[in-house]
Length: 458
Image 1 (cartoon, rainbow, N blue to C red):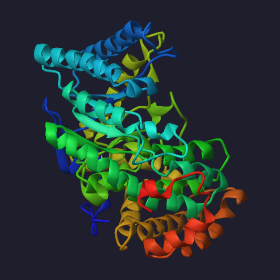
Image 2 (image 1 turned 90 degrees about the horizontal axis):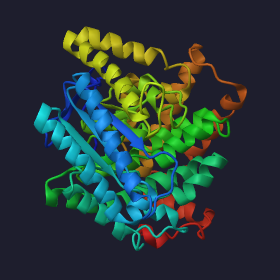
Image 3 (image 1 turned 135 degrees about the vertical axis):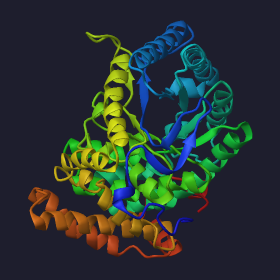
Image 4 (image 1 turned 30 degrees about the vertical axis):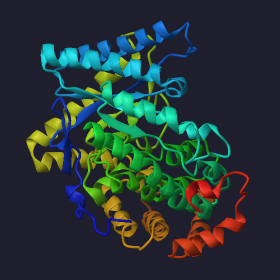
C-alpha cells in the first residue's frame, strides 16, 4: 500500500462534514469543507427496459430529478448530489445511460441557473464483468460498454465517477457462505486489489482527460453481502465485521490510483478511508432500509460528508413519490448535522457521540465503525508491507476490539457468535506477511474453474 501513515490520527478529528482534503465540484459544492450534503439514490419501479418502454424510463428519471430538486429548493437545501446507479440494460446499451445523464443534468443546470441550487450527478455504471462466470476481468468485451458509459456519461454531465466493482467476487461469495476468512482475504486483498489497480487506472485517466472527478469505489458486493447474510443469520455478525475491515485494503486502491473522493456510500469502508487518506466520504445509514436492513443506522453518519440512502424506487407513497420523500428525510438529518457544525466543536461532538452510542454495542459491525475504533484499526491497516498483511492486521485488531467489548460486558453476543472468535483468530494468524507466499499457499486450495488467475495477473 502507498499509505503508511494516517492523515487523521485522532478520533476527535474524524467528524462529519469535515475532511482534510475537501473536493470542490463544478457547481460549487465543497464536499468535506465544513458542511454535510444530501446524496439521493434512486431507481425505477419494477418494469421492463426495452425500446418500447424507453419513453417511460426517461420520464421516470425526469420526474425523479424534478421532484427531488423542487423539494430541495423548498427546504432551502445548500446543495445535493444525485446518484445515478445504472441498471444492467443502461450499461450494456450505453446510449440509454447517457441519455438519462443528459436528462438529469439539464434539470440540475436549470435549477442552478434559475435558483442557484447547487447539485451534481454521481455516475455509477454497473460492473458488467460480474455477469460472466468465470469473470474475464481484464479481457472481457463487457469492459467496452462500461468505459463508453463512463466517458460519454461524464461528457453528458456526470461529474462524480464511481462504480461498485466486483473483482474477486467469483470466489468471495462462497467464502462468505462458508465463513472462510483466508479465502475472503485472498478475494479482497489479492484479487480485489489487482482488479482495482487495473480498473481505476482507466477511470482516473478518463476523469483527468475530461476534467471530471474520479470519486471512488465501494466493496458493497463483499461487505454489504456479508452484512445482509449476517442480518438473516446465515453467517456470524463477527465474521461480517471482519469482512468490512478487510475490504478497506481493496477500496483504498481507487484513491492510490488517483481518485479523490467522495467514495461511494454503500460499502461502509468510508470512515477508514477518511482516516487513512483524508478524502471526503459518502455514507448511508437508516434511510437505506428501503433496500436492506442493517445494524448501522446512526453510527454510519458519524463522519459522513455526504449522507445518502440506498436506491429507492420511484413509487407513490401517501405524501408523494418515494425519491422526493427520501430527499426530505435525508435533508432533515443533514440540517441537524450542519447546525451542530455551526454551533461549534462541542455540540458537533455531542451529536456525533449520540450517533455512535446509540448503535456501537448493539452489533460488532457497528462497534468497528466507532471513530475511536476506526483509528485503532486504520493504524493496523497501513503498518504492513503488503495488502495481505494489512488486511490480516486490521482484522486481528477488529477481533481485539470485539473481544475487549465482550469482556467489559458492553457487547452481548450469543455462544454461536463467540465460538467463531478463536477460530477466526487462528485462521488469520496463518496468513503470511508476503503476498507471494500467501498466493502460493492459497492457489492449490481454490477451485480454479471459478476464476481465471491470469485475468488478475497471476
